Image (cartoon, rainbow, N blue to C red; front, top):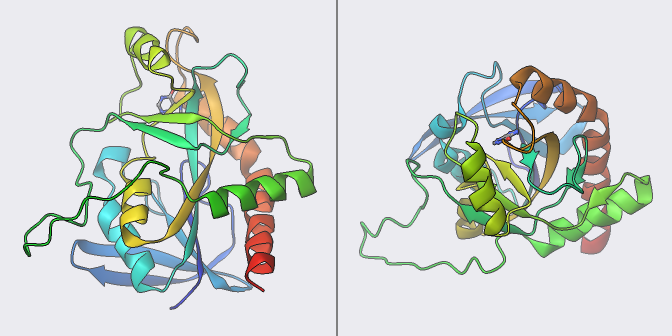
Length: 246
Ligand code: HPA
């Protein structure tokens, strides 16, 4: 299966498209499961947590996932993430296209460049997301009149637990707007692989301490309600990218 576009679907987005065949792709890091989307030849669907939601964020094989997309010829990837909000303006249900990341993960294999072959590579991630894909998402949101916040700093935590109130206060001081568990190292690996990558973050809750407690059930409900808008945004963003390539 070869395809120019990929969707990396996060929490609650497993059923966003009608899928057809499953493709098991072998990589040097293990295998990845990709799906084709019914009616769309140019699109690969990668359910980040597995199709039955069996992988917690810290157990996801991010390297196999991104490598498998590269191997399949993917140039552009649009990801989705569920996030908590540290910013009063970003209420549950809001969409954010983040432009920055702070990485607080700690147990993940986070690079393709281990230096084993004597090849030491330092990747520039000043701007971790693709401006091309970010701007396609923003143009899509204008066309569809779906409100999207055009930037935000995403702090990635290790999970799978949510954060403490003190952690959230600290992240807020560092400038984070939203918090999630899957943005890193995914965005960095995409950068290393030369895949144009951006994400739509869906705010599902105010973060710990801003909200009194976090309910995973509520997180899932909000994601479920967001599915239709996210699906439209992704398809329109792909149209925008196609137009720009003409
Ligand atoms: N923290 C981390 N990840 C999340 C949250 C949160 O509050 N909400 C949804 N994913």
